[in-house]
Image (cartoon, rainbow, N blue to C red; front, side, top):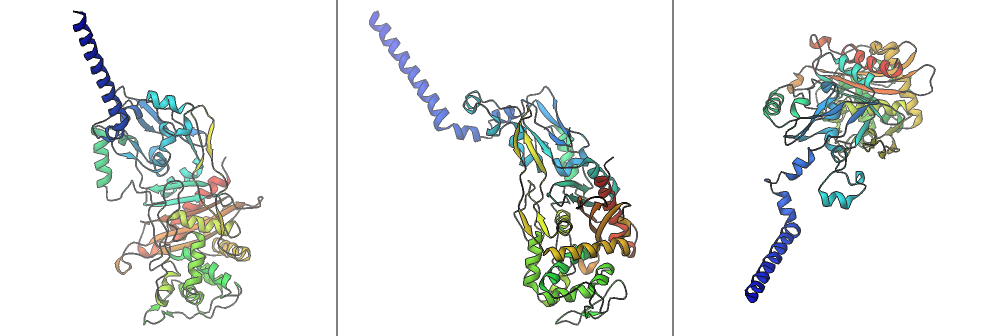
Length: 486
């Protein structure tokens, strides 16, 4: 009997060893395979078992978490969802994450290793640290002024602080409410289908993900290149430009939308936005020098992050002389995001320096301790300080004596540049109305804000659409919100 008991015990011991060996094989050798298996929902369940960290604007969270009591327990909520959607993006159990919800997901979800005081314990228990928070650079007054200024028209606004690169406003209209996308049920699926079927593309962040022909606002770049290269010696010297201007190597005549452009000075041409003058200046400056200046402002940069990716603004370098003439007035293949054109205005305002824009001031643990903070961003020179000084003078003239009068603010110094960009086959599309600007209070030493506004569907007929009439009032509202926050 004892012998049989020993044999049974030995057999049981062998079964136990085999079980332990198989468990080790599964957990060690095949752990990654099981973790990646679509049928394994453990990671997803763990992810939504705790509230997500929040995205903050000026000391107030604009996101939250709702306890649903379901297996995927917590869903995302949003305060003023359409207002801040171009900043936050969405966090959906069904459709993933976008914008800040995506780029800062590790912190917000609690998965970032830096949030884990005991990483080995978290790995052993398969738990996560509490989600951290993301504090943005957005000024809520500027954000709301931009959103309400567009008044439901299709377009976008970007505003930055010239001295630092902090993004103060990022607005895209039409917008959408991210909250219905948060779950994984019928409501989320219906919202997803509706938003994707909308021809106005409300989930497209026009401020950073769409590029437009910048039209006459690009003349700031052309003027900077021409002044730096010495093609034009001073802003009050005649430019020897014809009206109309025959595009080189063609029989096409370029005309102006205003008079008194023949042989105009740079100052007058800038204020009146003379196409012929700037087309000729671009050709005289040359594609290589114009390319260097455009790229120093940020054009042709495919690596810009804020921290989510920004669509590259482009200046085509494979152009002939006629195409260069059109590129120099912001047409042909020249394209820019509103954020890029806000960077152009900011460079003029800050003495010719371009600072990389950023949207996240710092990230913190749930307890409030800092995880990371924005440091000094990359700085490069777009133009000589003397050129920037001249351009500030020219941009002030546009607001004080030219087409940008609707951007003027009492008690402030404001510079701007209007633009009306043609597009579509044979320029058949409704023109885009542009305005870029910067502003400072009269009692302060440096500009506090630089803004770019583009309106896709300006009200009225084609002849009535203009940057000064359609986009400048929106820029004015944003600049006032920053300069006069009370």
